[in-house]
Every structure is written in C-alpha cells, then in structure tokens.
Image (cartoon, rainbow, N blue to C red; front, side):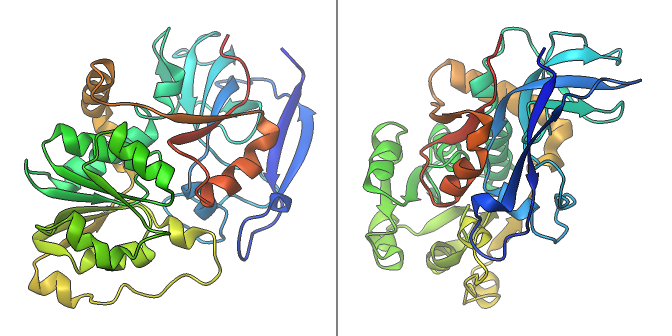
Length: 338
C-alpha cells in the first residue's frame, strides 16, 4: 500500500459557477486504522449534481462540506485495514469516502459490504444511489399506472435514464427532455423512450402538446427552471410531480424565479408535488435492489457510464457534469479494482 493519500479539499465556497480553483489538491500520509476504524482504498468516486449543493454554506439533508475539509462524495472501495468485526481486509464496500485515495471510517460510520464479484460499475450507477433514486422517486411518489404519460427532465443523466426505463417497464408512455440531439436519439433509440425534446433547440412549452397529447400524469423533475414551468401547465388532474433535483439552479448565483401558476394549478388540478431524498429509503434498500438487479440482468434496464480516469480530474469532471457534458452516469476511476 502506498503511504500517500491524495485529496481534494474545499478551498472556497463558490458564489457563481464552480471553478477548479475552488478546490485544493494536497498529498498527505495515508491514515492508519485505529480502534474500531476501517481504512478503505477508493476505487470509484461518484460525481453527482448534488455535490454542488453540498459546498454551499447552507444546511441541507447533510451538513455542508467545511472549508479545508476533503470534498464529499460517494465511493466504492476495498478495505485495506480493519479493526471492526463486521469487515475484513479485502472486502468491497460503499460509503461516503470523499475525494481522496484512502478514507478512514469510524465504528459508527455506515459502510455497506458488497458481495465478492459484484459489478462495481453497475453498483455505482443503475444499481447504486442513482438507480435507487430513480426507483423510489418514480414508484413510491410517482405511483405509475400503465398507460399514463411520463415526462422526465435530464433524461440522459444518471437518474433520468433509469426513471424512463422503469416507466417503460411499468407500461407508461415516456417523453424525455435533454440538451443535445445525440442525447435525445440515445434515450429513444437505445433506452426505448417514446420521444424526446431537445430543450436547447425547441421551445418546450410549445412542443409538449405534440409529445404529450393526452397531457402529463407524472413529471419527474431533475432540473427545475423553465422545464418545470412548462410541465406544470400540461399536468393532468391528479398528476404527480416528483421533485428530485434542480440542476438548472445549482451552479448559479441568479436562480430563475418561479414557477408561476402555483399554488393555483396545484389546487384546481389536484396535483401533488413532492420532494424526496433517497437516503429516506435506506431501510427498504433490499426491495429496490431485487428489482433493479433483476431488470439489469434480463436486459430491461440498460446502463451507460462516463468514466473519467484519475482522481486529479474530479473538479473538471464535476464542472463538466453541471454543464451537461455527460451521457449516463459520470464517475471517477480512482484506482484499480484488484
């Protein structure tokens, strides 16, 4: 084992768009596992739009990353030293390891042990936190009925691509919204969406009627902003709006106002608009794991990943993610799996 731990620390809290200079690279001695502790060598690091929200000085569902602290992020890694009875050297685990080569976990910090031979890339994507987010948000809050119309924003992203595929599995008519023609073709041709809208080339409000002639029953919102506004006015009576994220608002100091039409439309159309955090469903993870694994194994759930090699590329990778560069799940390969 190397005796160096490379890390990215949060150096500044951005006031507008995220910059690489908001992070500081440092190399320090790798920590040793003390009493009740586990040391993990990180293999894959998840990059997620929510990372941007974690560095604002505003409490959310987790405390903000402190200045001078390692940047937070979900990881999959291998145990290199353990003083905990539930984990042994060589075990594969997932946890909140952050932007670093090695992560030290205390006796009460959560680490999920993975089966030997697990597909780590799938576990970081369609069968990991983004797949679980799609699963619970769409099924538990969206409550789809066969034949209903579903609209998904950020449809070519890590969560959106899974939402659309689950919606098709459940017999829904699915329309995606994405930011390039390539992404739109991919969700239709490869994932089986019924149609897609390029919001950068088309006026979403004007074309939604063509794509959703029967209106929208479920809107899965990953973006907020103008797309949420457009969807609101096309919602059917009794429709459900699943609020997962607001990527259009994360990386700016001037978020868009709105949406207009609230609460009036919520009342007259008997709409339900609900936000959620996937961690709320942690005690029911086995339910989702079973379905996601089965769909993935039989080919009903397809995966696409955007793997960037090297921890040193984490800041640019996150900045690009926030700009919509990725198709599918973006992650960093920190080290080899073996």
